Length: 116
Image (tube, rainbow, N blue to C red):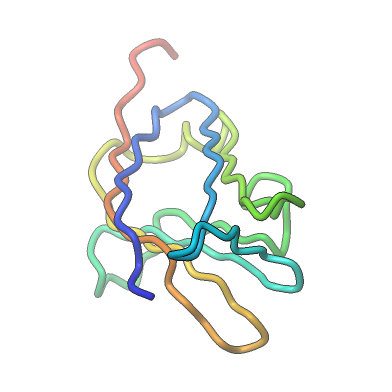
């Protein structure tokens, strides 16, 4: 299964929350029970500096696996405040006991805050 492409907009200084649901080609929900989900963003794919790192292993303020087969990405307003406006690349992976599948990839655009 090839990774889907989804671009995200994060507003600096505002809480970010997005619910993501995956389904098979037959429209069957993919569940995350017993799996972990992680996401990283960088300026470029080969960069060593991580701009944003989220995981389902240590919530809250990260990725929460839901009982309905979805995952919720949440970034607090305090954490988005620390992001520098710009465009970054990211991917999101699921780890099923060492078998890693990239589910999503794309760009994250951080729009700068005016009211501080």
